[in-house]
Each structure stands twice: as C-alpha cells, then as structure tokens.
Image 1 (cartoon, helix red, strand yellow):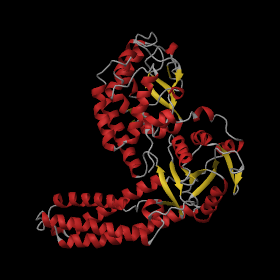
Image 2 (cartoon, one colour):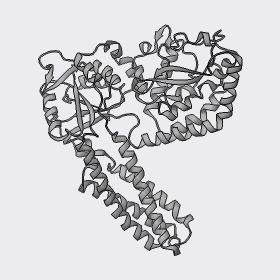
Image 3 (cartoon, rainbow, N blue to C red):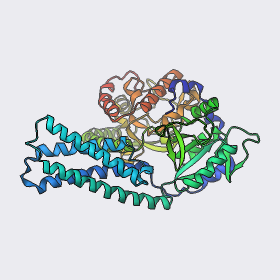
Image 4 (cartoon, one colour):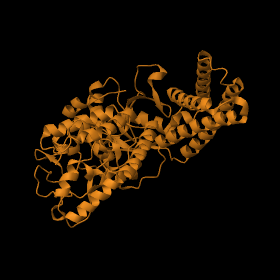
Length: 502
C-alpha cells in the first residue's frame, strides 16, 4: 500500500483547496443530482461478521446443552467464544469477508471451511496439551465441527444470494472517479463496463493534461476537471473509490496525484491493466475482473467501523449516565448567572468536510456570542462569564457533544472539529496549513491525540495549529481501538492542566 509521510505531505501538497473553487458545469450537475440510495459495503461486511460469529457461538453452546452430561458451562463458554473470535480472525486473514468474496462460491466456501478446520485443530491440540480432555467431550467437538461446517456453507450461500440481489439492483455500486485520460482510460472504462457495471457507478474523469491526449469525453464518460477539482468534488458529493489510470512508468505523475488525493477519505486504486510487469496474484486486488494495486484505503473501514461505532455509543451512553449530575449543575449555574440559552450551537467541519452543528454549554454573554469563532477566546476575555471560565477550563462546556456522538456526527476520539472562521496568525486554518483537510478523513472527536499531548486551547500561531494537525494525522495513521481507549483514559488526567484553557 502506498504510504504518505504526513509531515512531508503538509509541505509538498499543492494548495488544491484554494484552486478548486469553481467546478465545471458537468461536475456541478452531478453534485446537484440526487444520490441514489446505496448500501454501504463496509456495513454489510461488519454485520455479516457479527451474525456469523453469533451463529457459530449459539451452535456451539446449543450442542453443549443438547448433551447435558458434558460438564460445567464455565469450561465451555470461554472456549466457544475464543474459538469464534479465532474463526473471525482467520476468515478475515483468508479475505473471505469482502463484498467480492461474497459473490464467489468455490473460493469462498473452500477458504471458510479451511479456516474452520484450522480452528478445530487448534482447539483439539490445545485441549490435548493442557490435558483437559476430561473436561471437554470429543462428541461435542466433532458435532460442533461438522455442524459448524454445514452452518457456514448454508450461511455463506444465503449471504451470497442476498449480495447478488443487491448487486443486480445496483445497491452496492461504488461511486467512482477515474484519474487519467486518453486511450488508457478508455480501455479501463470498457473493462469496467464489461465486468463491473453493477459494482461501479462512474462519475467522470479528472486529468491535469489539457492537450489532445486528454479529450473532454472518453468512451462517453465526461472529463470533469483537473485532479485539484476532484478534491473539491469529493467534498461536495459522495465518492467511494478513485481509480488512477496511469502506467507504472509514470512514477512522478502517479506520486504527485497520490499526494494530492491523500487528503480524501476514499479508497484509491492504481489500475494495472496497462502494466507490462506481471506480479503474483497476491499483489493485486480486483474491481470486477480488473487487477488493481491498493494504494490507499479509508482510514477506518470494514470491521473497524463496527468496533468504532460500538465504542462510541457505549462510551457516550456511559458518560451521559455518570456525568449527568455535572451537566445538570452546569446548566443551572449558567441559567442563574446570565440571561440567555443554556446551550450554544456552532457549525464546524465534520467528516469529509461536511458541516455539522455541535452542542456546547454557553460560556459567553448572550449578547457577545461568536458563532463563527472569528475571534479566538484569549486569557481574560471579557466575553466569557465567570461560570464560562470554569466550564471552559475543565472542558465541561464540551459535554453536550455526547449527544452529537449518539447522533453519529462525532466520535468520542478523533481530530477536534474546528470552527469555520478559526484563525492562526490571522490566517484561516486551512490556509495556514497545507493538507489541513486530511484530518477530516475520519469523524472528528470530543477528545484526541493532540489534546492529551497538550495541544488544546488557544491556537494563535501557525506552529500551534501545525502541531495539532501533525498529531491528528498521526492518530489517523495509527488508529486502533486500544489507541482510542488509551486517549479516553488519559483525557481526565490531561484536563488537570489548565495552562492553555481559557
């Protein structure tokens, strides 16, 4: 996979967001057109994994219950759960939890049964070496193995049938942009139409060339603009996949485009259809029958989306229950001190630069509210009330954003969403830092890696906002659930440092 050095990209990335302010009429028409409802492939994969694991666990415990003389459930239940977890890991390692894999028969079933057999071998060997054969029945183990194999075949065939129906209906199609033009792009488009028309909804072409090698239309697909225009286009309408149609020999052009496209939360693939070099099958993934190289993936996708979603909802609900007395007390104090609403709503940039309204406790006098944050709050700011000073220092003013998390607009952990007019050294953040919008490849969060490393509060200099962005990009590149958990645990500790909070 192509990897971008975040710090270097911040320096090298062209100022595409400033150039791409006017799109072509064709691009504007696509943006204005209603987007056909589709089913997220990532959601399908996540739900399919959960259901499969639950069915295997229920089957394993059901067989135990049928053979009532087998012993205590305290021995069986942990083993069943661990085996189902291992099975899920192996199914993913065998790449069977992919939309493309769900459409196959022999390949999918063969890999699933091989992985399931390996799970049972590991379980049997573990029982033997731990000398626990008197605790576990061989009849139960054999029954779960054969019963699980049948279950997996039936489940995967039912899943395949469902995916094929959605494929025929076009509900799993990915909105796709192609980078490149000319004869290379024409061959690619024809191959997509021949083998992936139900998977791919082609939006248009983007190419920096303006000569005869890049006409205004290729195989009936319109050229919508330059690569910089694609960055703006993808912020204003849904783009799931970008396929770069360039030969591997054009290394500099490929790297330049990938560095620009890196800021987008999309899957980026480099088509191998024109390459004379031949690699092993493991080097490719496929769009229909078209071999491609995986250059970049969405930062959080597939099974990780499910983990992240569950983590956000569980932590948000728990925090609301535990912190409700604090929130009620803050609301009463705000109301008693000054006239005006308890809550304050402010527009900020969310995932993929979408505008969201975040909730906060009001910390300023109601006649001095600054909804666009055109002027940052500074030490001794006269706009801030006495209660406001306290809730800002302790970050209590941010607690209503737990409702944004439950609505799905924020995550518990992620890059902090900035106000639209926030400035550093009299420059808007996205003008001050190249590649700034790369931090919006994931949902913004209530807390983040930058905040627990001391980069919270006032950002009056370019260096401060640069440090925030660098930490945000580090978080995106290294995300994991354990990383999120660590940040959540460290946040209360870091909040005790009031140095930059006012």
